[in-house]
Length: 200
Image (cartoon, rainbow, N blue to C red):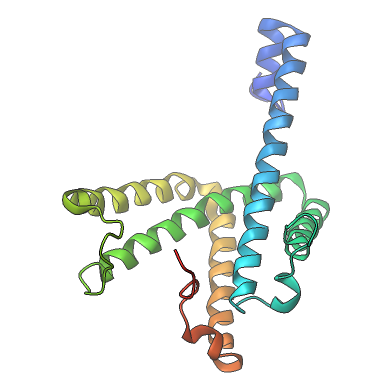
């Protein structure tokens, strides 16, 4: 049974019958579709936000919003096109490795945010009435990095995780090259903090 391409579906068919197997596969298909839409929306909004701050290639195009739907259509089409290209160009095993890489990157980002917060939390300038952890700050400061390390350890510990780790390292290198490129080509866009002019 374990040699089957879909062992969970095979077990369901063996124990509960073909109808239950089809129902399971339909549910899984809907779940994957929903997850794909959520990823596409979040990525397109990230592209749009970076474009509004002039920190994304071709930002003047990517920050456009459709007047009727009030959605960033160019940013959404970019993410859709990238997804289609990856689906066509990569075989199933490579796609699974990309999915694994996509679980490593968020953990790294969250970990970086935690480290940055811990580095600047003692600096003066906190607004009166702004959000703060108060007495819970120290427990959260201890538990959050531990949880992040665990979230990183799980996907990178298997031997098969070498390719996803290399993919993540390549993306980080690409971002590391993009940042000094911005410093040299458009330094003014990096001088202001994103959202600093927003009236909360």
